[in-house]
Amino acid sequence: MIEARNLTKSYGATLAVDDLTFDVKPGTVTGFLGPNGAGKTTTMRMIVGLDRPSKGTVTIDGRRYRDLPVPLQEVGALLDAKAFHGGRSGYNHLLCLAQANGIPRRRVDEVLAIVGLDAAAKRRAKAFSLGMGQRLGIAAALLGDPRILIFDEPVNGLDPEGIAWVRRLMRDLAGAGRTVFVSSHLMSEMALTADHVIVIGRGRLIRDESTARFIDSSSTRSVLVRSPSTPRLNELLIREGATVETDPSGALVVVGLDAARVGEIAAQAGVVLHELAPQRASLEEAFMELTSESVEFHATGSTNGGQGDR
Amino acid sequence: MTAKPYSFANVAVSEWTKLRTVRSTFWTFVVGGVLGVGLSALISGVSASHYYSDVVIRATWDPVGRSIRPLLLAQLAFAVLGVLTVTAEYSTGMIRTSLAAVPKRTKMMAAKMTISALSSLVVGEVVAFAAFLVGQTMIHSVQPTVPYATLGQHNVLRVVIGAGLYLALVGLLASGFAVLLRHAAAGIAVIVAMLFIIPGLAAALPTSWSQPIEEYWPTNAGTEVYSLGHGAHALSAWVGLGEMALFTAVVIGVALYVLERRDA
Ligand SMILES: Nc1ncnc2c1ncn2[C@@H]1O[C@H](COP(=O)(O)OP(=O)(O)O)[C@@H](O)[C@H]1O
Ligand SMILES: [Mg+2]
Image (cartoon, rainbow over the protein chains, first blue to last red):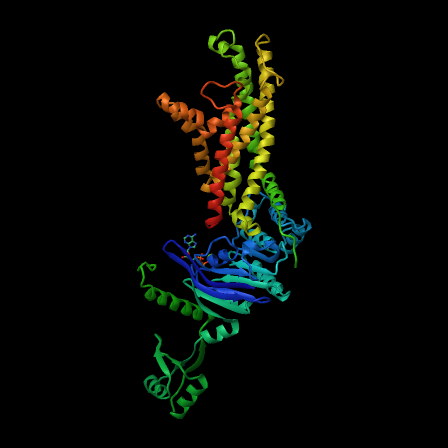
């Protein structure tokens, strides 16, 4: 289990991660969600000890990453598609990592086969495409057969086939009882793969709940109604307790009543309807709304120093 | 799972794989060897051919120096190797992967420096012996009547072995600066300043200033091991090399201290 407690990181005046407390529980895919610049990469770098927290701690099963006896056998991390020396072959890259942790050489061939790089493994890595580089990074993460995997935006820059492959891999890993902690700036990506989401904005924790709950609670429902007698319908709906707005095309957007109730009210009053459509905000919209709130909150909330971005 | 913790030996094997699997290692050593032995042959041969026509050469004739001193140019290759083994980690992004595998940073860097210093020592000794033997052969074949040196003569073996040691030490010192600076250009600039520019500038100062600088400047002190005999104002060979080693140890100590504390 990964446990972050009051994790905070500032780079000079930039507060990249702000007092994050969360757990990543075993045997699940936990999505780490936030817009670009939210602090996802910084958090992951602190987990594997590349950056020092300014405040707070993060531990793996109660130990700091640097105290793990064999790091690659406990945590596999893909933080960057290009974290290898381009002059070295893919095989030798993995070999030197395996040797550092006393992992047998045959495991290098195994992970190369898992990621489908066996044919290209003897070529120098600088000739690799972005997708192949990503696969090499994933192979390195799998090298020690670790219980915990950390992937930072693993589908970035991949073609659709590669994306499907990564998704399947993450589900397989979690299915085999491993902990997968994966970041993305796209909600839709997480909806497909994650059981649980940790949402951050501007370095702060916004949500930490199951994906189903998050989707449910963050997508507002509304009903779109088109009618020749808009003003009369507007009045009736407000009387029933709805919030009503008029969209640019003249249709009413009703919040607080479902489509069936809107239809009944119109029928009782003899109002003709041309269109009656339940709307559901897309996940992406819901997510944007949520994180933009955090942006506003943060901008007004940073009274000390007055060096909020913008 | 009760896994065996990774050892320094594991990390050293890993660093050896890293060093031998990039082409730049091989080519840097080739450049160092060709430069060292080639220049030694050239200077030894030219000096011998002027032995009878040039009074100064004849008066100060030192066949060992003629073949070993040219290595002071080849040391650049060893410095470059020392810098690149470290800075390539940063310029390629490999450092993130390396430190994820070996989060004990001092262990990782110490293993890297041990491996590159040992490799430089082996290559340095080979180059030093080759330069000496090729240089003496040149002298003898250009002017068979000119005195030349053999390894059996007093202090000659010390000079040749010391020359290789010095080359390895230059590489280590360069690695120390590279850990501090993280960029190849900056690292090479600093080691070149140490080896060539500062001693060169010091020569322009009044003697009362330049004399102690020439004597005690760490890399100058190290080159005392290149001389057979020692003037009144010079450290002895091993004291000089020892001073340079001590200085190198301090630079590496500071570098590792900084490495442990900063963001990777
Ligand atoms: N090394 C660094 N130096 C200065 N600022 C940084 C550094 N790394 C990240 N930041 C800043 O910290 C914030 C969070 O960045 P990051 O963790 O990369 O976000 P994300 O991965 O969610 O896109 C951003 O404002 C970014 O500019
Ligand atoms: Mg990021």
